[in-house]
Length: 232
Image 1 (cartoon, rainbow, N blue to C red):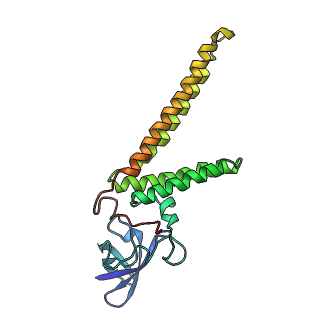
Image 2 (image 1 turned 135 degrees about the vertical axis):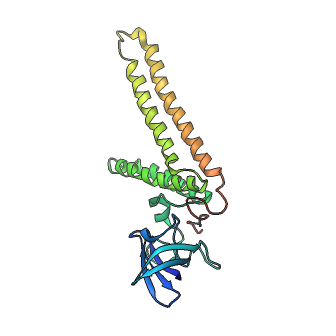
Image 3 (image 1 turned 180 degrees about the vertical axis):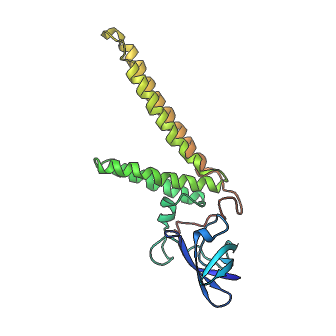
């Protein structure tokens, strides 16, 4: 049977379909046969079982006349919100364009600076924001047709630099017995800072790569072309 999605909330993963028979059917994310973002207004084909729709297949990713602001899943209130922050920062699935990526990066950078002035609580929130950054980078990678797991590269590089830098720093003081080895200490400290600087450059290059590389045209394995999350 054919129908149209009336509502969908990605939180609980449930929605409502209006069938061509005039009846309405509930459906769950597990009933979808495709790994694709779902929005109100999409045309679907499904199997009706009682009041539920199963084996749901999306027929049209973006129906004619469909506006990206008509319905925003996962955002409280109507689809008139100018910024779908929930999808941008809390969902690692789907795709985002270059504009939304840079907006997300700038917001996270400014928030990180502000939180750095708040002791303890700011540190805890900053650690939690790592997930937000992974979500933003993962969706940008998806838009480029690449695995979202690559978003872990900056964090892996940073962790390796911290460990190796700490080892270099501590290693300079092992076996030292006098001030005559000051140059050795400076060399070790310089090596630690050098590793951190190299990690910073790699992370910066990775961020720029994500921000300047165009997305794949048309649908790919991660869904249809991204809609704009920041409508301003």
